[in-house]
Image (cartoon, rainbow over all chains, first blue to last red; front, side):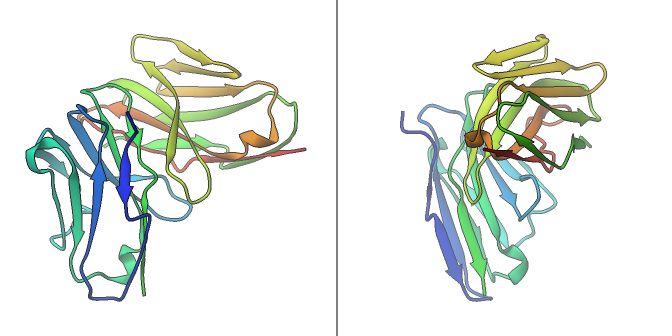
Length: 112
Length: 112
């Protein structure tokens, strides 16, 4: 058990470019969550998966955002046509059912 | 919609002091509540999880209590150390949705 892994740790991109982040949850955890955190704020919920099914999406998740979890294993979060307001830390977490959530180290996105 | 408030927003104490961090939440229909620690630019580290049926949970110098009916939780840190300096986040899990909702956190500074 190596914990939740996120890649990359940092991403700098220009406005208008597409970016994709990856999250590898703890093996056999059936739930996977994406959160976004800006400076001085607590993490805000974006979306969550139970196995491969995306069960809930926040209104924060505009149509430029898409998340997948093929085969119920790793997950990707893609942001199309990035905007400066997308700059934030993107956090992934996993859990077994309603048990403790374990977070990864996050991906820090900077949109120039 | 679940809303979480953490008081105080920031706290500075001398080393060795005992301290209490407060958390309140509006929707008491929760499954559990987690306290996290976050160091600058890092992900979240889970400190304690209290199930909705429990009143408190202890780990080392940390003790968390939960009063679900009144929508309150406290984190007690005994004999604080400079290494405890971090942001502490409270997050109830559940309500009408299967996710954690975070407050803005309490920024703790323990001075040597």
